[in-house]
Amino acid sequence: MKSKTSRVSLRKPPTSLISVDRHGHIEFVNRAACLLFGYTKEEMLGRPITIIVPERMRSAHMAGLARAAYGETPNLGGKSVEVPAVKKDGTEFPIEITLSVWRGHNGFCAGAIIKDISERRERDNRLMRLASQDTLTGLHNRHQFLNEVGGRLSSGESATVILIDLDGFKEVNDTHGHATGDALLQAVGVRLPCLLGSGAIVSRLGGDEFAVLLPGIGDPLKAHEEADRILDAFGKPFQLGGLVLDLGASIGVAIGPAHGGEADELVASADFALYRAKDTGGGCWRLFDHSMRSEAQARREMRDALRRGLGNGELQLYYQPQLRLATQQVIGFEALIRWHHPERGVLAPGAFLPALERSALALEIGSWTLDEACRMAAVVNGRGHRYKIGVNLFPTQFRALNFPDRVAEVVTRHDIPPECLELEVTEDVALADDERSMRTLERLREIGVGIAFDDFGTGFASLSSLQRFPLTTLKIDRGFIRDIVTKPSDAAIVKALVAMSRDLGLETIAEGIETVEQEVALKTMGCPAGQGYRYARPMREADVGTYLFGLKHALEA
Image (cartoon, one colour):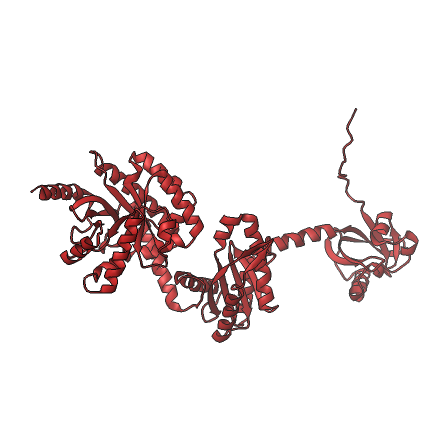
């Protein structure tokens, strides 16, 4: 027994045919044409062809027909044109019409083959919308936004471009899922147009970046007002399906034509300003100035040179010893990156690391650093020693989703005990995404590697964070050590940190020890370990063995 299945007919719709005499009256019409226009055959025969022509176009149509009847136009045979037509009920719709003319027994005649192209037009319009609209929010996409900006600038009109990057959106995505993230983007796509009014053109450029075009606005004060309004709007939480979500914004503003006479240039200027806003911590707006462009260019050139340097082997890790203060025995080393620049000599991190912020190159260099440090750990611990190697992490490296897996892989590949690797992260980086950082740190501790809070006391961490986070080491910032002998307040802070760290079972390392007096003060407070120029400057890998050998003999003497 055959199963019944529904089939979609592939038969083409019947062709509509109409012919008219020299006066424009309908002489012939087939059934398909009657159905298309909603008339009976009797209602169409003998009637002027203008019954299917929109009223606004009838005079032009009849004039053209008259010229054709008197032979004033070339042969139209086979030429198709798209024109509007009208049904009996007044509905207007698009048709494709192929005309032909001939001489019959009664003189001039004209015929038309007519196709309803409503579906094709709707499909074309849909494709046009897809080409110009963001499918998630319905706002303009990047291509259409640039067209809008370019159109204003080419006409000589002033225009302000505002770029908006959502602060905290990634955390919403990670915590609540992409469906909630998409709903949040749609909510932003509603809030911004409602806030700014019909005169503003709002676009989603991609990801969590939105853009606003304010046509006719060239006054920095007015741009200032609009940027403040947007920041204030993001001060109100978004409520989605029972969730109350807080979202901030960082904003870059550029005014054309002063900051860019073409669309790409003006949007790039706003992007420079946005970078500056995010670089200062986010939650603010910045207006473009031309120094930003030169700074950005310098960063790009620095990143390009660093990428070449990484490939050419110009980057090296230097190692600074960490010692037990009571016995002067080495317990580990901090790995510190140096760049052997072919023209500028050996560069410390402060000369080039700022160029890597939020750059994909930071992941490459961070991965290389981790691999080199683990290789070094295998070298120095090859004879039963247990020196730990501390590695400073880039923020983007620490926040990478697969970072714990990467750590586990490199520890296994170099066959080192996990406790010989200690990952140093600043408190600001760890606390910027509290819950996610906690999960990352917990996974790292499960692997067995150490976790150090670096430069503690210079960020916004509370003392309670030392108890909550799975740390192994607290590194006291050199800024407190420098004046520990002369400033009672610094001494009190260090003493409290040492005591608390000890009570929590953490190793404490004081950074930047340079004098005997500083060392004595730290010993008196009970600080167990330290590093600094008092003991050794950062050294090449080749010098580490010599240093350890010399220190051993000095202690035995």
